[in-house]
Image 1 (cartoon, rainbow, N blue to C red):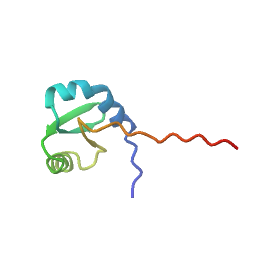
Image 2 (tube, one colour):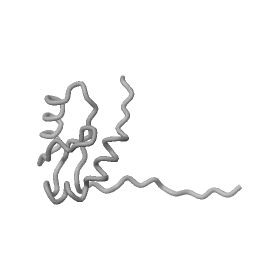
Image 3 (spheres, rainbow, N blue to C red):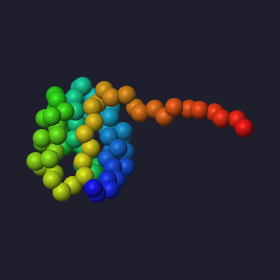
Image 4 (cartoon, rainbow, N blue to C red):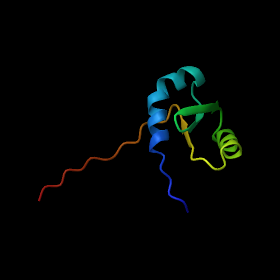
Length: 78
């Protein structure tokens, strides 16, 4: 399996999120590089579009209402 580096796409999603919510509302968006390539009502629609149109390019599919991932905080004292 190829190593994926979606750091650019994640940064683009985070940067564009307010505009994506305004444009697409609550939907699944396809991010390729520095651009959003569309919003879709269902994950399956977004995935089909992305696989068909970007077969050899890394892409990110995220929901505009998804909560930001949180890493649990643990303090361990020796």
